[in-house]
Figure 1 (cartoon, rainbow, N blue to C red):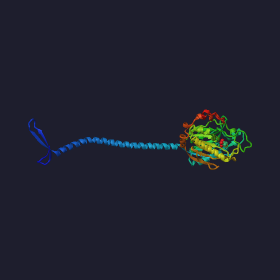
Figure 2: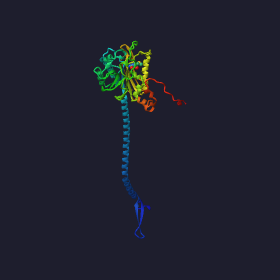
Figure 3: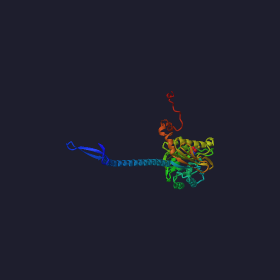
Figure 4: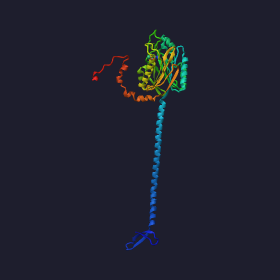
Length: 407
Ligand code: CDT
């Protein structure tokens, strides 16, 4: 019962209690304010005792969540950075600087040392553009001697290399090695067994020969043509190559090799691209005049370019081709050194008929795009229908038709 004490006007709580078994009650008045203060003190201390661990737990959870969030952000940014670094590394690996040394002329009276000196001069010119790889022409160390009628022995004595490397060519290897540049070089090769090949090598940036190719498609004739303005006696002086179109992985790229006339044959490029070649390199000597029939001069350049552009596209690879050009011993050659992208576009082309160095940034990843899509060989090729390509050499009769298929 609540009442107001007449003694101190304080609000009190009255409590009654019976005294034993007697019919007597004692009463006591408790100040409500004191009761409230006592409750408050007790509740606050209980609440405080319960709250402290709660606050500690929540603080801990809060800190842990913040830490987790920070770690997640670090993880995300690390992942982003890793992806960026990986793609930068990939594109650096795949970005090659390519120089094609075109339009070399080596006259018949030029000694190899003089020719090598000129090759080094062109290499030095190329150096200012920091290429990783350069391409020299076919039979780069001598004149294009198959244009002359002579005995095989005379040709071998004068124009063939019995060893590669040899002291005449050593300065070129040294200069390229010093510059950290790899190269393709074409020359006439006489093996220790006496075989004669139209050959090209790839030398890496350490000056090491890492691949050799011997020309497969030898054009023209082996007999003397006295009425022709010049000869084209590759079939007389060289044997058909025995290396096939092997691909070598060096300096961060898969390189395929061929020589001159090989470029006109689709089989050349398909053999390379089926080995994953990313860049095909070749040297060539294409006379401006066709000694067999009156072909218009402009078609010589046209067929050269159309072949390389189509081959690059259809095989999803880059192609770098280096020419001799202008008048070598008075015989004109078309020149037209080019670097072609896997899109079939010409990335660089020589403009003159004199010594000239052309360059392109060769992004090998561009070939990946074509290999993954339109020329995804594994997905789209049908070798079961290509049998004739390896079964026949010359064209044969049409294959019989299945009459049921016409219905
Ligand atoms: N060197 C060489 O192979 N030259 C040939 C000339 C034939 S012309 C169609 C070439 O294909 O360029």
